[in-house]
Image (tube, rainbow, N blue to C red; front, top):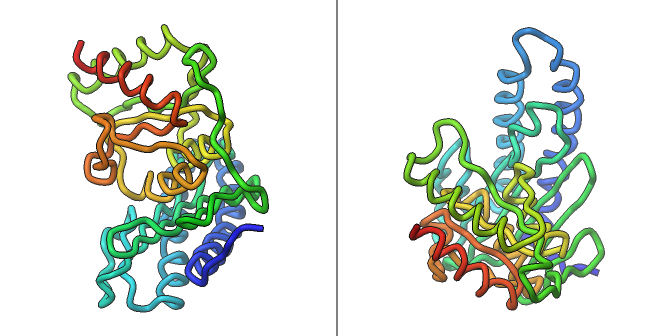
Length: 269
């Protein structure tokens, strides 16, 4: 059974409560797909409503904790030792198009260290949890990263730069990286939710994930999840500035150094 600290219990309860509303909203989005205006405005409202539910639930249980969230920014609190990092809807474009691959992501920092994480897809009811030094779980099943050791067996996930995101030089770097990984591995996936990509690395579904320019709320919970599943997470220089730089590579201990070397070389082309 997964270890549920009092804080992690608060986080899972908040995710499930917000998730119930997202399920109803998702059903409405599917109905709006055929309209001329489309569901974009509705999704923006749903995103903010989910964020409001999460912040209210977290602050009700931990009233002094600050919350860093995608829409609201930093909601201050007097407790400077803790911070929740929240993404109310990771995979907004999927949600917008009626694709059931998105998640609520919540992480808790204590003294600058990630200590608890929740990633929840309400449509599939997949609840990924992690607690520092207590492992990572999918519902009641303990997670371990995949054991593959060679790039020729490696299935990777990534995120592709899109309209308005990244400079032409950054786009060129990404496509150089993509070409290098394509030439060395049998498959790459782009599913549109960094939080779930990291959770799936922790679950052994993917062997690796890399991306540039992410935000703390995209990756905080997933970073902890991969590490608690015995994986390796660094930035794309091999350092620890993932939350500051937004660049991340996650894999097992065998594939991580191989992919890091490959991506570094490609980034210099």
